[in-house]
Length: 278
Picture 1 (cartoon, rainbow, N blue to C red):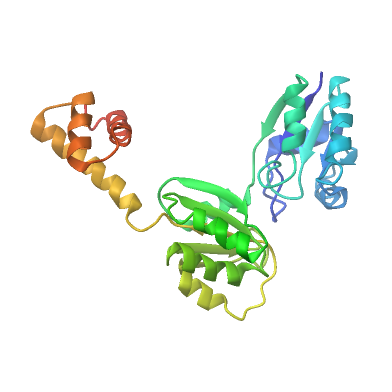
Picture 2 (picture 1 turned 90 degrees about the vertical axis):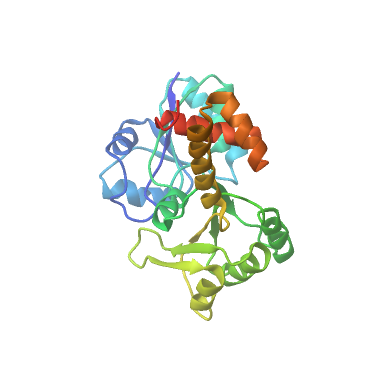
């Protein structure tokens, strides 16, 4: 059998592609692309002449089985989307699932992803959750944001420039005035970014006609990261004062702080891995 390569491509700047991705695109028997016209520009830029075939949301039900047959016949196939990583809020998951079911080898050729790039710009601490594009209808969008109101992690959201002002207002109304990073045209010539409280950023963008896909990164709610740091400090202090360690220390701290034992134990294990406790 052949191999299905999941190849990440630039999200704007054509220099943001790995050497491995270029080699795989050159050596593949076929490239399945979300938009062949768009991908052909990338291939032309690097002098790659591999044959292209379309694979997108509107033809995946019929094209997917055809591509699997080609893979089973021994062809190597590279899957790309218009920009970024296939399957990461882009077409690709259906074909990957078919390949697994058919016993075809699947390999990732990692690279650009707009959400990850925006997160690296944010400077926000803590764990992260990715939600992709929000519902387009106002009521559904507000309902979905309400489910995120108590989300303790940073949140990555994709949004169109047309809906961005309304979305920022809804975030402020539903989730409070959290810190946000908004970046548009990521890695492209006219890249812009804004960072600060949601209401402040919404005011800066009010009345502006924006173009290009936007990425939002919402910070953890105020105090969530600090609470994690305080728990570490409390554990260290309790270990010094009590002389306990392991599960006994965990039970002591969980009882005093009235926190889930699992949460305290995970923090203890992190401190142990860093050599702060025995």
